[in-house]
Image (cartoon, rainbow, N blue to C red):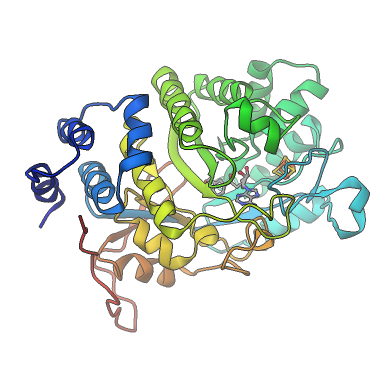
Length: 397
Ligand code: V47
Ligand code: SF4
């Protein structure tokens, strides 16, 4: 049964809650749902129902296509002037012994390690420290491009940009223009957490506000550039805070159209100041992907970051609105392993990524950061046969 047929079957169920029916009708007509309807989805939407709607939207936009890329991370430092309560990674300056601070040359050596390898993106993000300032990052981006011009530099978040522009006494528009001139290609989605001040002040006090986060992305978009967005969910926020976050992103996207991908990030509770807060279930993760897909009608892509949620949940998510699972990573990121994610040394080669996608009946496409197709793996066979473990999951209702 295809996704359209499943949606019509759901709509013919006489017992469907009237509010959920109204939302399903809107989705079937490609109409936008409201803030209140977003809250209704979180409060009443069962997994099966949400899966039918989200998969309908996903397949309308992308069919079975599922994207991944070949990337690696550089995390310049895990020391940070901020003290976000959920962060397992940051070691405050006073705990310097446990920290690292890479020099420019060390980071350039990390880039050179990939010489001759077909990676297309370096994702640079880490803690915030005074010496990593505007001049430092401008030089780093310039030198990366001098060494490897085609490597896409996806770097830093508004948390760093707000800090370094303030220190350099320049406004956001000037700062983003200088970053572009230095060789920044796109901005990753981090630092968004939960925009609403009621939550943000409790978990991420002092760093840029939700409003400032959006302003910096919008200045970047005005230069014709692209970026991603995230939401850190499943801690002390209520459902309506999540909807508020999605609504602010949707409005921002209406203004600029510069966001490519939305990446929900599940709060992991190991070794941080919020370890007493339990993690949400995989069912809640899937519900959250699905609602994000339904709500963000003006975002092209929803990404499940496999390094954070496990390979199995990433596979499941492909039936709940997700069409992208990030990249190879090559064990170059510590943010999630230090927070208790299943993957302690996250790395997958292309064959593993392709098989992970094919094993749940989807169509793997290697993309670059801007979603240009690099290679279509639909009919590519690797030496060993890909054995389906489970085919597209039936959507229960
Ligand atoms: O901003 C930190 C989150 C983010 C924890 O744009 C945590 O393609 C859960 O933004 N539990 C950084 N999350 C990572 C990020 C990202 C990742 C993958 C792809 C892209 C992209 C962006 O990690 C931070 C914060 O929200 N984070 N600690 C934790 N304990
Ligand atoms: Fe610093 Fe980022 Fe960790 Fe916050 S989440 S403490 S800004 S590294």
